[in-house]
Length: 167
Image (cartoon, rainbow, N blue to C red):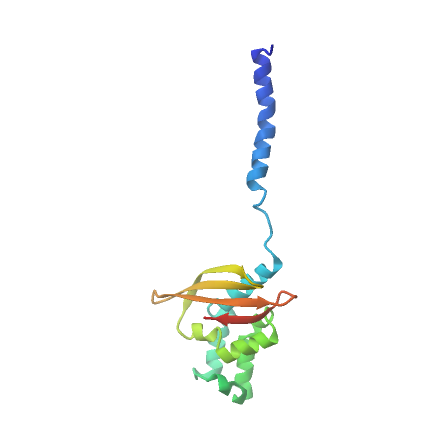
């Protein structure tokens, strides 16, 4: 027969291991690192949707004088303006392929969002989608309007964005 003192000692000796086991079960998945591709996609999209990142938009506007150049006109621009566009995309060029940058230039990404006015990036939701990543970004413009921009990014084997589509 177990006396009261032995039962209390037995209960106390199990308390700490049970507490540690419960903590291990609760926090086992909390420190998982996200996949490299997902981190790269988030980094690219954050840079893409950050208004005037590193002054890129203000510098571009200063060089092109507010001209709204159509997609077909980029190649015909004077060298100084071409350099301004290259400078605008320099922070993104570390995160995307040259082909992706050219596609962004032709589609005026992300210039078209910055041209609408100053905004803050509220949130980016991103999820795997058949070898790519679907995203929805919420942009809050100074006037109070919130725009949701959705699309996909595809990364290559080196975790560099090779394609962005925006709908």
